[in-house]
Length: 200
Image (cartoon, rainbow, N blue to C red; front, side, top):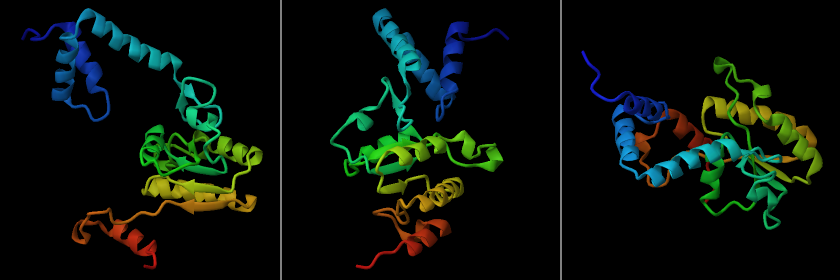
């Protein structure tokens, strides 16, 4: 049976389909969208992808994504450099930043300890975090890893390394989401909510 779509279109769909969370139908929609762009718009999109790939690197201090030696947060004198929020991914740092509540700085691990996936402490930026504690006057490290088995294991591992250094280590509170119903919460979430309860 003859191929219905032109090979370049199929290739474009295949490339979009490789992206996380993009199924075949969404990949097709994106491919047709790109085909309907003007030549100038298509070139601008291609340039944006190429520029991001070539110019984005890790901040030399916090390991977040940046296009210069230091990211804007690490450069800012207005931030509290004595409080470090440790996250798994740059997306997690962006989520915390979007709250507009955190005034400290970040450290991005680029993953979590997961022996089943062959990810150990040496695969993360833990050494860079420890080096920061030696250089900066850090008073608190907030472990904001995901509330998963891997995230919890990573938080515990790092906290054991930091405790002897005399740094206060805290963990983000988690449990029942605002507006959530108890009957729909899983056992793990409920257990953590009970564990982290506060006096009112």
